[in-house]
Amino acid sequence: MKKFAIEIKWGIIAVVFHLLWMVFEKQLGYHDSKIKWQMLFTMLIVFPMFVLYFFGIWEKKKRYYNNQMSWMQGFISAMIIAVVGVILSPMTQFITYEFISPNYFENIIDYTVSSNKLSLEAAQSNFNLSSAIWQNISAGLSTGLVIGALASYLLRTKNTEKEVETIKTEN
Picture 1: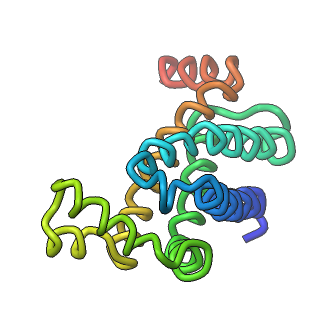
Picture 2: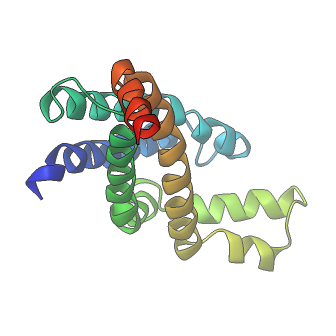
């Protein structure tokens, strides 16, 4: 576990940030009066999440790999950060929809039905806690891996990549 302490720490930081983002969305009205824009606004979380992953991988590079980290090492760190978020996802979704925004599902169902985007049955099927948990797990893992791949590329030690290629060509 100590080997992954940095990733676990940054995974927990990302989860706490996610909850703060939900409070921010709620306070700005994206869970009620501006609900039609909520999906677009939620996508903006990718930018601060990139910063969090970047700092998490950067800390791993500095403290664990002594400033010599390959892309793959950084990407593995990003995967662990993402998995921590995925494991905690049911809890974050429960907190979001039971405490931060308890009327969210009712509001989004009303909006999608009144704007003729979905039938009542389809809206109720799409917008509930179980569905939100599965969507968050899927989105958290996929965006975490894409963000992590990019951050790892930017943070990799350039000569480490060349050394790996040299070793492969010599054998």
